Length: 359
Image 1 (cartoon, one colour):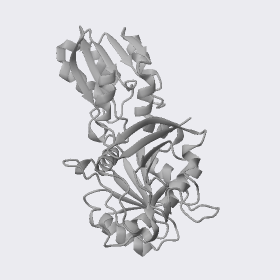
Image 2 (tube, helix red, strand yellow):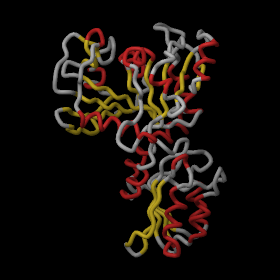
Image 3 (cartoon, rainbow, N blue to C red):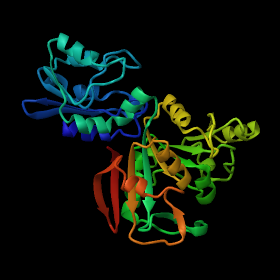
Image 4 (tube, rainbow, N blue to C red):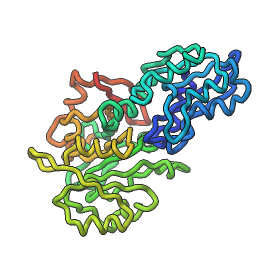
């Protein structure tokens, strides 16, 4: 099952709106087939593993990270393929909460005489499929907030002058996280200040860049920005409000951006309604969203209770006068809160990555 989980992670960031599933076929303690969800969500993991196993699948055990589907979508039910292959036993990590499945896949397999066990490595699988679960249950993506801070909890220097907070190892880790995310989100303030590209810039991984999402209430996104220049190569979604000029939306659309209108908040400070933003992204199929800033956007997501996991990268140096990580909120609302607990920690050169999960 741990191999199946590792295989499933290969597809993270590229299978939406489908979950990134891994599957392994074992016959007499020998792995005879393996598969993972292909980019775009199909083919699914199970048919690929069964195809590679061939005749060896008959009487074998299939390990799969999520309950096999039982409904006709854009591909036939995986449960039917498993039955047709003659699999003798299926071990699923977790049941699929999708109402179109929701235990029916396991029921169909048992009705065909296949032994079914559920729950092996369930906690790990639930974390890997958290985006799928969140989209099904709450109609929003799983939200990961990434913060890179100095020893004095700053994300930038005063006046936004350039300052390196973390080193190369940490930056590589962040680009891998981008590749495993369906979409990456920043506010228009970050775009105007830094002109970011927001792609995965590791060798050979440009094609695994996430959808770029910008919160831009008044459509101030410059036409000469890196985001606009790359909009036809890498999807760019701009979330705006009804106060924006239609002509600006038309111009962005002509440049290759996809403009989406969402409501604004009814209480100060002014901004786009974040639950509505997440619903709109979920409706488009996004399951894993990486929020990269800036400080106001990060603080807004945290204060709204819309963050599910936090990646806190702490560099080795202080900045002094600079931009606080969470705007007006102290970072202790995360690091010293009973609502968050460190789930993992990793040293990356001179930097430390701490991953926080909800309690």
